[in-house]
Length: 253
Image (cartoon, rainbow, N blue to C red; front, side, top):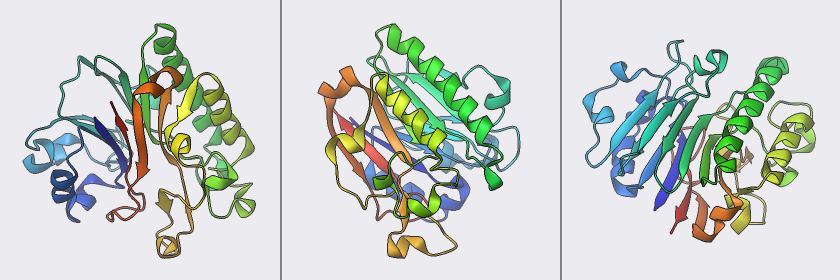
C-alpha cells in the first residue's frame, strides 16, 4: 500500500492547479489531506467523487478554515470524526479510520499562532491526541498517524533552527512533546530511512523560500514500533507544486 499525506492549503485552490490530474497519476491507495478549507457541500462532484476512491470529509464550523479529508480505495470498517472534545473538533482537524489491520489518524494539528498565542491550545490538542492514540495502542492495534504536525522536531528538520528557537513550530515545549510521543513507542517514518538534512515539506510563500529550499519538515507519518516490519519506504515529494506544503508518504507491505 502507498499512503500519501498533503496539506493542500485549500482544496478548491489546489484543484485549479491540477490536483485531480496529479491524484490520477500518483494513484495512492490512501490520500490524506489537511487544511482543505471547505465544507463538502461547497465542492463539485469531480472532487467529491473521484473514480476508484471513496472520500471522507471533516470540516470546521468556521467557513474557509482548517478541515481534513481522506480518499481511499479500500473502504474503512468505521470512520470517526474528531477526538471527542468540541473545543478541538469544531475546527475539523481529525479523521480516524479503522482500516482493519491498522487504525489511520489523519490530523491537521493546530498552529501556535501569531505571537505564540495559541501554543497552549496546540499543546492541549497534542495531549488529547496522545491519550486517544494510546487507547488503541494498549488494545494491541497498529496505528498509522499522519498530517501537518506544525512542529519541526530536531534542528535537522528546518533550515534555520537558531533563528526560530522562540517561534512556534520549534519551541522547546513543542519539540519535547514529539520526543515524549516517540518515546512511548512510535516512529518517525521518514527519519527511520533518512538521517541526513535538507529534507523539508513546507516553505514560506511570501519569501519564495521554496526556490532556495529554506524550509521546515513539519508533515509526518508516524507508526507504532511493532508496525515497522511492514514499513518498506518513506518519502517526500518535494517537487509537487500547488501548495506551500508538498506531499509526504510511506509504503507498507
